[in-house]
Length: 416
Image 1 (cartoon, rainbow, N blue to C red):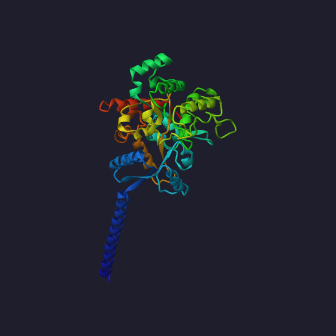
Image 2: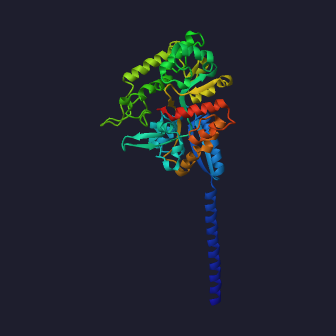
Image 3: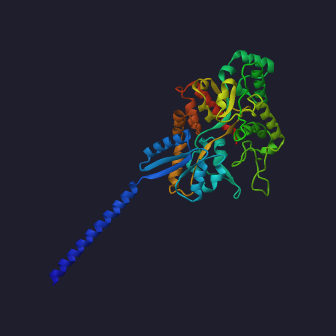
């Protein structure tokens, strides 16, 4: 009886050991499977070159972070915000990283985390570009909050034809007649632009003056603030020391929030606003009559060959053909500033991978990746270091380095 009991005990012990080994192996395999499972970061934004650049950067990030996959979902510009908001309003974890522009920042802000700014080298990111859309003013806490990172530089500035403005005969004639420098990078006010428009059209050198958007649906939203910025920045009673506008708002509002209110008051309802409107009207008088045809983002290139240049966003350069591009240089708006039109990426509150998403954004704006943005996608970088490296790169054509220099100067003194 005692021997039988020992056998039974032995069998039981063996069974227990086998079960324990089985449980251990199952636990190990489950853990291994979990660790080896690919984590997907999903970015949503509008379609185009920017989306292609983000996906390119995502592929680089994945190669350096095994087990992480970055997927960019893009929609037409007219649809993407509504697609995002539908998901965010449902508290869905569908998207980790949310694309937006300065004009949609307030709409998506409630659904984005406050980014951990210490992760980013904020001193390397061009401040005025980041400020308009990436940083909003919280009217409850009365503090600025970073909700997104600018991942490229896009500014509204002056593109001009070098065959006109590097013509010594025209330079001397203009100087003798107006006693002002003919070179666009030296212009200090909008009156000079009007003088140049008059000079060139009255001498039948160009059919039109400088092209500027006047389309009622969208063009005016960009063009008028660009002109108005000169007047706003020089009127301290409007800007209250914030010549670039109040974060989260823009120069169309005063640079402070009055006591008792949670928002700033309009600034364009002023003598400065009227002066800017009159200047804008005069600029438009040197192009095709808007009652016949309105200039917009998509058709300015049709008039460019018959004009001395145009006021455009840097992203519009891609719509010019190669011969026009090779005859185009860039300059700030008169007075040495530009209007920002930067795009941003923020992290959804409902993302299951918040830390990883922030890590990818840090990677995206690193100088190394930002250099590739320009070299491979013609996107002007947001990184100051990347600008410096590109400008000093002698393998890049002198014209492109001129663009980089002027965009950097303009972006550093841009308005909102």
